[in-house]
Image (cartoon, rainbow, N blue to C red; front, side, top):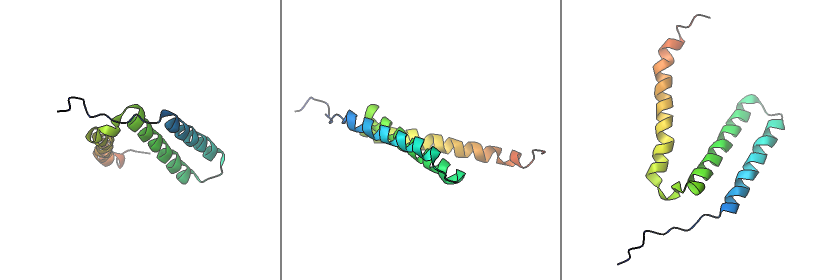
Length: 96
């Protein structure tokens, strides 16, 4: 009987660091590119989500806790949608 807990391979921290650095350089570079506001914001949000996922999965070791990672990402999004749907009726009644 194996009494050792399920061992997992340590992530390559330097590889993750270089990816995070490259994504940060991309974010800074895209700011200086003359891109319309909508695609710029979408690209920045997407790269921020990728960086957050890299940190959560490797440095916080959530790669081995799938349900925790799913709950951590899905529940806040559901709460945001619930909040927006809750205040939507009030948006139409604000005097300008």
